[in-house]
Length: 293
Image 1 (cartoon, rainbow, N blue to C red):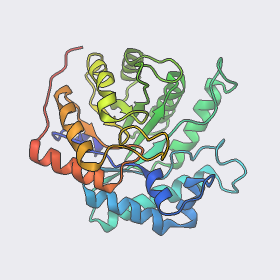
Image 2 (tube, rainbow, N blue to C red):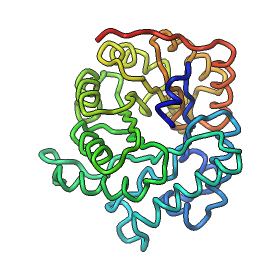
Image 3 (cartoon, helix red, strand yellow):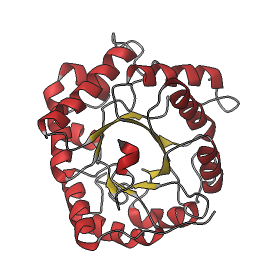
Image 4 (cartoon, rainbow, N blue to C red):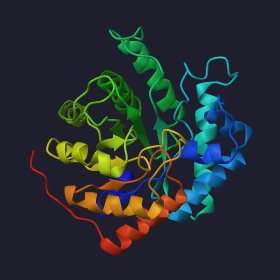
């Protein structure tokens, strides 16, 4: 289904789950993924708002639902992932089937060898546990990744344990590298070669600051490109994001020239941002570019 969706002029992913949960009163230090079990109505409501705003794909509340982060919670990966996917599916059902559900997978939370102590095989096993628990989703998304070796482990686990389409997005800094030093070209060539269905960038920066990264990325891949920026950069004093929904959509409009296929939002982006993004794309359309790599 997702591969069919990619044949459209553009695809819209949802916005920030964490921002919405914090606005709903989630306490500091609370594990967001456990709310899928303790407060399913809250999650269904958030998903529904993103669908109503125009999202074609919503992310299940599974970003940190791995064995390491759930340790001591009293819940298993299977319990949390299955509940999270079920909540998203229920929101889709209530909308009349107007969106697909992505199994959202973030970094494990431990650095891989040689920088850290987690082995590649251990990372693979942890990702395989998540994807096997989330097979009811329509696609798998690895996001906010900074270590190319870690996302490689995740992509292999997804491809070897499911038939679901896989999207991979990494987070780049203004220096055009991830926190662990991965370059844009290395990401593009590695993940394309391993069979990702779409690749791109999310988090770290706003749409304006991400433009150099996008400009570089499209030189290295013919895969559909995903962009899911933050709502600008956070104010160092108030910690609020500086770019509003209309400005966000305007900045994303300027990025269409790179032939981006998938648009969405990360930290700070609420359903209002997705609604503004949808409106812009409906009015302006998208720019299709045949990239030569």
